[in-house]
Image (spheres, rainbow, N blue to C red):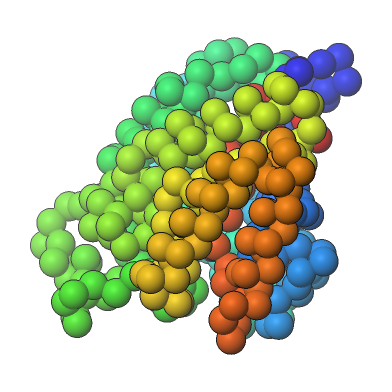
Length: 334
């Protein structure tokens, strides 16, 4: 159960709340990485050719600083010491990704999607903790969290959009689904809105149909909450096993949504096939039955061997990481 006597509960200090949120973020990333089975996902037993375990662990440690900084800003806004638009969300994301790359040598960035998901909601989480007396040993209202998070996105600035565009161009321009407009790249949004005051909420709406992470940001984290967290809580409440809850959450999300990272790299047909196979795994019982466990293993084999390169559900991984982040903040413990 959440918040047992063994928890390191925090009661009332700003610095401790910042540390608490940042530690939950790092732990969420590492729990997801270390979880087996996780069909198609990177792990200690299934490293990728160009990205090894040390790269993922170095990336996880790099999450601490930007999340710590954003938690402070969320607290300051809650206390009316800072305006919503002064949270510097875009700058902190872009700078955090830049700093992460100084800690490992790999062509990719191991935390981009995770940081993009964690950063806005961290502001909302910290704001809620502040308004509830800085006590993290009680469960926060997640509906309030996402409402406040949306306020931070809607009150962000054009500068935030510029910083995020730089981060996208540097990190993941090859992972978002193609538009039917040839000129529609990450710079096109800023070109369209160059003479307007715009914000990150409008930015994410611009790309919501082409990437699940952007869809989550523009829809109040509804996949993470309604599908991810509800699944995690149900499984954990049933068997108190964090690993099983993570695996079942991961495959449930993969069965509910077509992974846009897969669609970009392998095409919509493959993404649809993965979605179909995962639905069959859920139907077989998932982690709850022997047949379901065998189906999870078969799905993992398919994702790793059916194409010339491994099929990695990257977008679903980012949403699963967010679900784990929320679970840890709500007191669930491995």
